[in-house]
Image (spheres, one colour):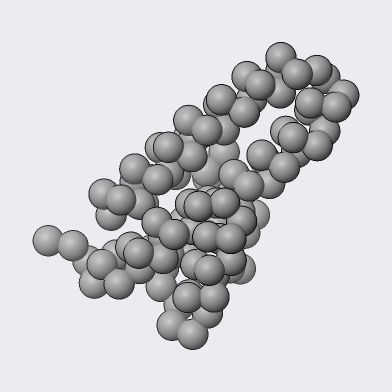
Length: 108
């Protein structure tokens, strides 16, 4: 049986996984009535979007396209893991970096 916090926040948590637009929509949906489950995935996606931005703007430019491409694939895998956790209704941190995202963005 699902927790009410999970069932109430599941839609916004899934929406947060769809680029910056989805993240902004989920953030707005979560503003009035804070939902812990939604906030968890908003923090995850802020971190993954920042990683993707850094990969696209710095890694590709200074370290080459091969390293940028490999990191892009790894970030995509982390995104898939996070999305599957949101769909299942589990608080699943992205491996290696998820715990850091939760600490860095805990005020959200």
